[in-house]
Length: 90
Image (cartoon, rainbow, N blue to C red):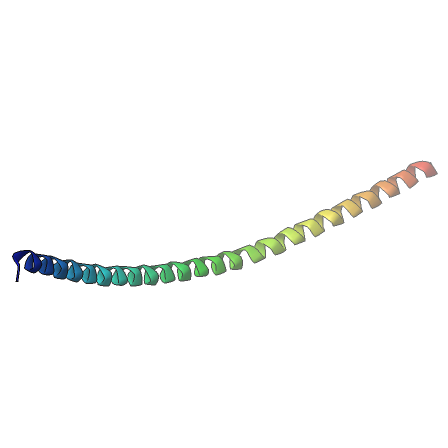
């Protein structure tokens, strides 16, 4: 065989082996990245659940405060009505 054919065959074989090794490394890296993304997703889900558990009582407190505010407004209106009627009776 010609020397060029042997050199090209060896180089082609080395490039093929190198590409196979790089493909395997890429596959392993992508698998690790997927596992990391799944862990991050689980962590985000836990944080979301925890924050929602914290926000529900605050939302209830906000509703309670709005109810108290409305009640105070009704009471103030009633008191002003009583004062107005008391002043008109005099």
